[in-house]
Image 1 (cartoon, rainbow, N blue to C red):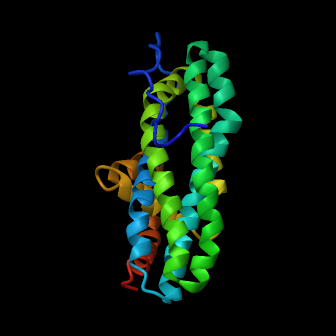
Image 2 (tube, rainbow, N blue to C red):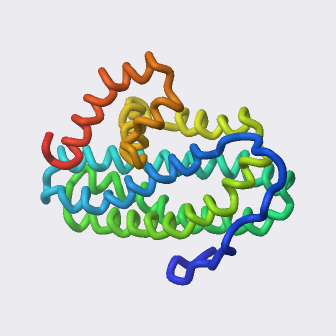
Length: 234
């Protein structure tokens, strides 16, 4: 297992590919942005919960459960459908794939600790119960800082030259299916908020006009209320 205190040093980039791209894998980078932003703010959200304020703790714990589920699904999808395909169709990436698997295993340790620590903190909002949550969040964030840039430099280019559009779109469908019940608007809000332009380009690219309108009329106000509860303003 990779040690987070001594991360592997990946090569400067993945193999060069000839020929046209077969799909657009930019969604991988977009979900990475959302997960990084959400985990990077998580410690501050936990710290913002007053001792014993279980209502506020429940809101933050719901968010942490959501992004944990999203990260689990993201990696489970890659483990199930990506590594074997890339290794078979782009043999020069085998070493990169092996490194990705080790990084996944290292991150999973922290993610499982987060899942185990959340219920006690949600129920009590006690400072001592928050400490394992904070430690696990920090571990996940550190692992992401190593893994995501490496994956974007070495695996995403391979995806764009060996996967079909249908194969690439499966990962987004898998992630949506794994979203906890009632949390789709919150996950969409996190994705949009993490994009460089606030999500306008993402909406135009990924959501038909009527669906984008539903987001603006229904989803965005719900997400705003959720953010207010997360930040102790609701």
